Length: 206
Length: 206
Image 1 (cartoon, each protein chain N blue to C red):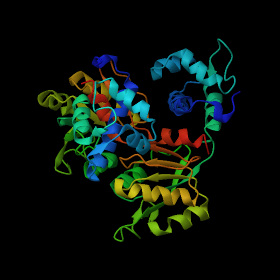
Image 2 (image 1 turned 180 degrees about the vertical axis):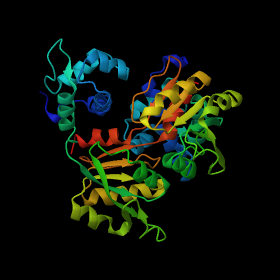
Image 3 (image 1 turned 90 degrees about the vertical axis):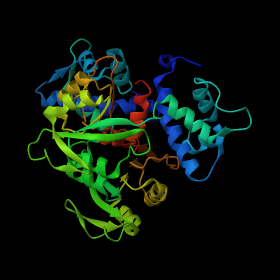
Image 4 (image 1 turned 135 degrees about the vertical axis):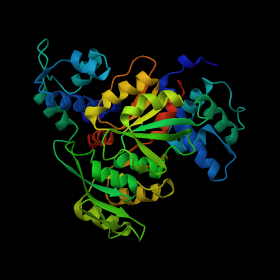
């Protein structure tokens, strides 16, 4: 079994996709699957899937497929989402509201526990069951609760400052919706959701 | 200059990121940049950037940097976002509302021109300046307006059916917010926005 640092990040990036597919198979009543079936579902080759899994040891016996429950257990443990990470949500605009209301993180290892905004007219209002806190309280709350994960949904011009504040307070994984490349120090991870960039990538082929 | 099909998709995927950075440089008053400066901004090596650009010919003279206005023009033309693509938005829930209100597509080549929902209580309401249409009218509207691009913001269980309908009506590029891997026929592109998967990918390193 490979050490954590030795597994390529591109492989790590595929594990959540496998996990997502396994959850759907389980919800559909399936108990056993194969790399072939997973591959068909995901548009990935089955040798690729077996190779990805091989970084972490054996998940099934050759020829008899994978037990879905066991595989989900292993993958959630590898990804450290066999627990629930508390998340700070920074920015309480329409997108933050959608994230709270639709909650795409439910059942996937993350729960938003505090929401921040710097606009006086937003502070004190509620987003779902959470009170919107003054962004000035960000460092204090992140430290007190020991938060390691944050979602940033502020305008591009404010994003780097917010990210710096989060990192300074101890956050190590940031999902940003600001359409800008943000810099973080070594040891901190950031991913950007930029729907327009994804559309542009596809427009090339139109 | 390479033919369209010959440029690796991973390179195409980086062009929108370059474009995003160039737009910010331009907004900041810059007129000239270099692969070094772009690389620093984006955390990409400058040889990588020069190699990516080389697929499409020469964008600047060795040693004198790139004219930002010219480079933006070239990249927007390559990505075919030197025009504005009309977009169908399928699903009129909180996320769709956020997309309409925050409009991350503004100035980047896409404009939502019609919104659909299958829930009777949503049909006829407005989302921004758009009236929410019955999802049953999707094929008719997509065909009439010749829409090639769609954003899907419906629950996972409904997403494949909506995608099939869109493709059947002529859509060729789909951005999906449903946390599920969807299948599309050859010649159609799809990208999925799954924020929980991005968080899981980072949780591995926590």
